[in-house]
Image 1 (spheres, rainbow, N blue to C red):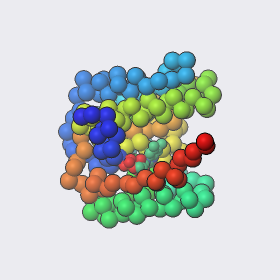
Image 2 (cartoon, rainbow, N blue to C red; image 1 turned 30 degrees about the vertical axis):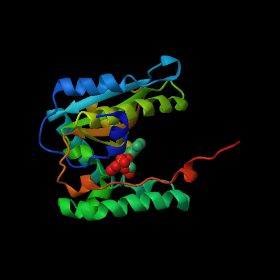
Image 3 (spheres, helix red, strand yellow; image 1 turned 60 degrees about the vertical axis):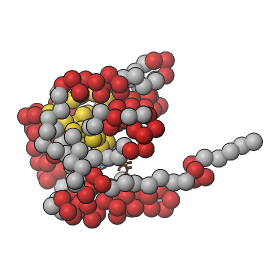
Image 4 (tube, rainbow, N blue to C red; image 1 turned 90 degrees about the vertical axis):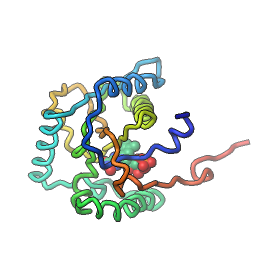
Length: 217
Ligand SMILES: Cc1cc2nc3c(=O)[nH]c(=O)nc-3n(C[C@H](O)[C@H](O)[C@H](O)COP(=O)(O)O)c2cc1C
């Protein structure tokens, strides 16, 4: 698959087949993710891969604490945004709503869990960065995550970044024994996509160029 097709086709996968991903495939994804550029070639990204019983334990712990703390990690908990941005996030939820209804998960459950697609995915990836790096190094980690998502897609694997789980980063760290000096930035689900699932068929749109690009001549 050429790079342009990969970039145009990739979309977030939130429903997965019950089909394992081999260790070789996972390693290939991370080898490609590690090819991303970074300032001074620092490569500040670090990934924790969890699957099988350990992933199930993580899911159990997260569900328990979500119920106990009664804190939703849904988008309602984020700071109010200017309409320009709020409208974009409303639109993606509207696009997904009919598909979510068809999966049997209620819409409110989906929102409460922040669309935690790794609950049903064979693999959950936790993205971390050492606390010693300044926040600007998030950019480098983001580049590597982009490579990861595109590499996985080109290999026939689906992914979904999950930022809304970060309020429960302490539970992730405790369960997976992630050291205190690591900042947990993102979770990512990965697996073989269920291409029949209506949620996975949602294709989000993007703004036209004048919205994101200005010319100075
Ligand atoms: C940093 C980041 C965090 C995200 N967090 C979530 C999340 O918590 N739950 C979710 O369902 N999707 C999440 N997404 C996926 C976005 O909703 C998705 O990328 C966006 O709507 C565009 O759709 P597409 O990936 O299908 O092109 C996240 C994406 C990024 C890049």
